[in-house]
Image (cartoon, rainbow, N blue to C red; front, side):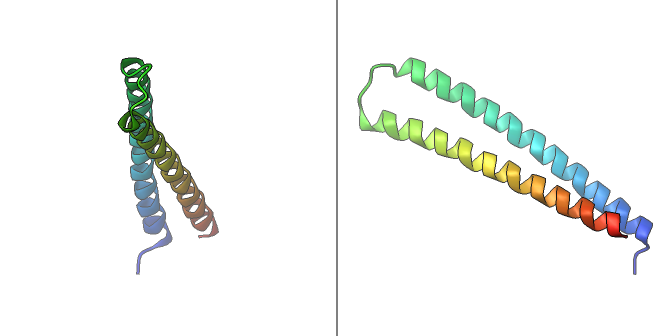
Length: 86
């Protein structure tokens, strides 16, 4: 069985990976925002259904990334709460 120090170290390492993942999610959201702006500018005035679908899909992707980020924040909080009890 692992010692308390080993468990804490392993959790800290996992949380560092989560932090890196959170940064990647934030970067992806920024890129999606840029893509949304570029698409809106390029397709300004178009009333084609495909344009609306593309815009809606990018918006949905951004919302799902936000949900993913929120889930990671909850996971970090839970892990930190656990290690505080050790």
